[in-house]
Image (cartoon, rainbow, N blue to C red; front, side, top):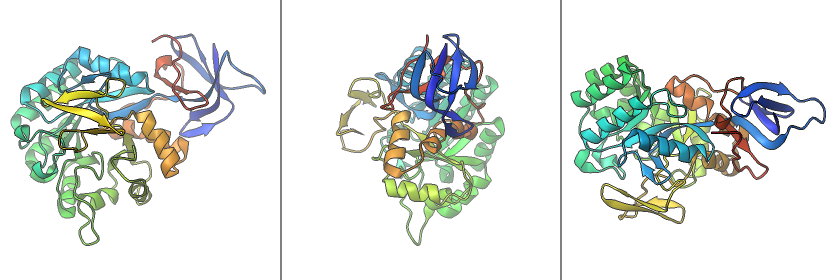
Length: 366
């Protein structure tokens, strides 16, 4: 079957005049269309499915409360229906046994399409920049976490570890980096100088820039300023709630190396699920599009990655092909994951197919 599109993302650029041949389950070829040729299905846009490196939950399921293979698969399914083909399930600050259970679940799911590894966000963070993370479980980077990281890496599972580098033992950070763990600075109060030291010690990424970090000031650029001017990768939540559009545009424009800014959703169970859930025994609910806890503080995001792409395009003026690349190619490079392209062999359920209203359309069989 030929699927044609008005626009197709080919090598990072949206181009007209392309279509994909499929057998109903996999792409068999990407090819140029003949003049006036229209496929059995015609869509507005085709692209490889998106990759989200920060997914706390979806479909009513939270990694922290359901750190099982079944939980990870349910979250993957919820996001796949919304255009995200690959995720890093994210377990946030919690008791050691919860993080260990999430690691075992990630190992059990290794190699399954759409489950790319594990993001451990905390518990080694700055208490003053904890956000909604439970302070009872915050602790320094320790040998127990190093053992979890080693178990994951011995199983060849990609791992992203978010931590406050100014509070971490440099020797333990070096051990993690040597294993191939991607170290990301987040929930941190690091100074600009401390951030430079962290970059020299193996940090290659920043988690949801601006959020859970001290604000950048004219006389104190801090971690935000150092991150923007670095050649590291930075994650951004482009929902219009976590970061003002002008601040986001400034950060993107000031990067010294192109292709180092990517989008994350920071999605919670309400994405593709009910409008409330429980975290640390406290109800988190959607209010005016925001996820808030009992204190009224932001508690993750009620948004999928495709929503972030479209909001970035509409509100920040980012070209749509650039926004799509920030949610596909760039996060995969940041994690050292193989690229995903519209080419023979790609499962059709890992295509991003959009109709004229830019809503996702499912193609073929799951």
